[in-house]
Length: 259
Length: 106
Image 1 (cartoon, each protein chain N blue to C red):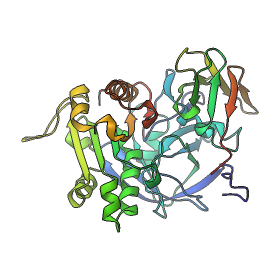
Image 2: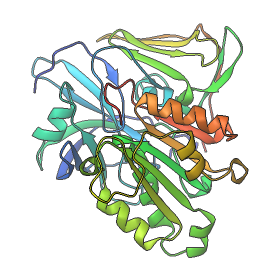
Image 3: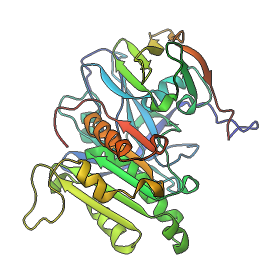
């Protein structure tokens, strides 16, 4: 913050890759050291800029996966076969490499403790990334205050195609295991492992009625994923009586595949 | 690394899209707006010059493609803001917004 209380101007910074973690066959997390990072709120994103040898530049936005409490910035990147940027980020970058980024960006799709709860998170595919930052932030911020946890219960409904495509699968299980005020529910739309007892279809009205708190509880709702999923879920929740002002969305754009 | 097409601003949470115009949220255009405005424009409110609907820019539908980025009114679909970037300039057309209300910071 500058002296007059306004946010500082967002500038391009050179970030160094500290570590690369494989999350699923198609996603990797880049752990970055960003000099003079001004800090961020859970749900914000950064723009990443790559410059080719001939000077051509491409920019993409990636949600921040790490909570504000982490000293390092994590981005989880899904590789798209026909992508210009994601194959480079997810396959070629190594520890010690540098990338240009600017941020944090976006004050609309953010959640932190003062925003309150209950917290209802609905994600599809790599739409889990900003939602994970919110869950990680909640976990760190409430670690020492179980009363606050009970005031801020959280539910995550996460749609993936198959079990091996579930990003942060083990960490989500660990978080839910140790925290009775966090419920994690999966739906697997294409293929389910043997003995699967979770949902097996795309998110629909009946599922949302089952998972969401009643509108009277005024849950803070964050939906992130492919545009068709986000729009159908947001529309249905408003039809169910949820206040549109409490339903925040982050769309990826149209997608060929179903999530 | 090699790139194959013109510059475009694309967004997604760990996901990018290539090719056709994509509809995303105003939130995704936050970085581009930061080249023009110092305060965060995603939390600013814009009033549509067509129908008077007011919405937070971060929530408005945005169409991003190689030629530029267009922010539309969620109600009447009119263009509220249009931004195009060339190597030398950023062009902002705000004729579709009667006013833009920007928070003075927290």
